[in-house]
Length: 572
Image (tube, rainbow, N blue to C red):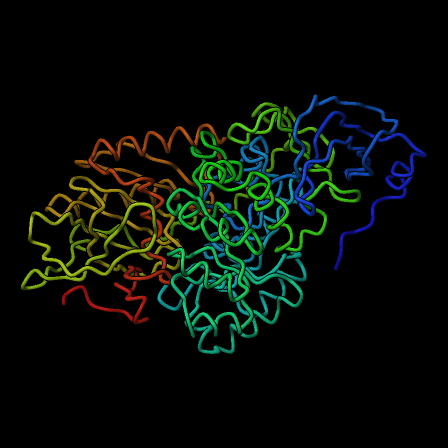
């Protein structure tokens, strides 16, 4: 495929036969192909750049030497991790300069299947925004997880044909892919000419070779710089990520500094709304890269042109004639916050604020509400794991700045060990199944925190104090989430101290960005008051059930040793 041709009227504007809708004068246009700033005017007609240079126009805007860059493209993200519905996310992202995303909706797919993805797609069509939806390949992520829905290869083909999916969403079950699983071979083949996004944490050597040979093209889960470099050596795209829990962009950037930007792009993956409000979106990734020594033009290319190339957004990524007029106007490159944002030639944001009426309200359907279906509210006893006779247990170890865990062997009775209780309760089909275990280094010594955001099956995850009060507060937290239809909550001594209601599939809020951001900031401050010093504790909590990231995880089935790819007991 190629970029669609411009309208006949845009061609007339290009020839100079008709006036442009808009002429942006006095700017410096970034050319990602020649890696230079070009002083020229941009003539815009019917939503595309009709041409460079002077033209007659119905409206002229002089930007007085400002830098003009194509709209930013997030190479990989999950809408649900923003906790915002489609319209509120767009209201938050556009002022930051993000005009397009490659979105894998596998969170809502795990809860509500095709219905959930369809609701996102329908809302996205109404946005002044390019919402590229991928066909989620791993619903569920693995057989160790218990989702509310599952996708077959036929569902993947349906997503591509009916929902115009841009490609295959991150293929997380890498053991199955490496071993030639026929279902995943069929899923990957369904992509055709489209992109196949990957998820390959720690894969090196022959395993990486097999994963690439199977047809996967990208990764955003590198644990180390040399791993990222090997993947690029072998032709794999590597996305440099800075989300709320995973922040590897600066650590992996030296591969770009040494060898250039070929086959790299930037992504947020999972970013909380209060961080979008304060530090921004992809523009923040650009700022971090430049601060760490990356050439400014190359950083901007990784945020626009290159992700558009990978995802076959043929009409995006540059401001040449015929490309969609997603134009970012930078009076200053400080923090890479645009002074103005044009989407398809229309002004949608100015000086960090969305324009009134730019984004239509598109509420989520009521059918996505009330999606927490527990068999029953658990008792404290049901959330109490039987302690090993000698005290020695397998414990999930968490680490600041990464969602990778470590498989620890600790004495749970040793007061010097930072250990808390953890449980996962199945919430889709009323099975009553509960997985129990322990987690270390989370910093929770009293009360409980719980969430219905629990990657990727999104059951109910709850952590509580190790002492006898823990299970009681855990039970209250779980019951409260069931009552409000999902969300996140902090409980102490039987009292709800902070909460973030997420009534849309138990994943997203129906409130404006500022309201949700305020709720999360209060929740995180309350968590810090309880001694939880780790960044983004609820985001980190939500990943402890993702059974396709090493080393040790927990689902409603129990503890999962990801490296051995099997369920293991708590007791050693």
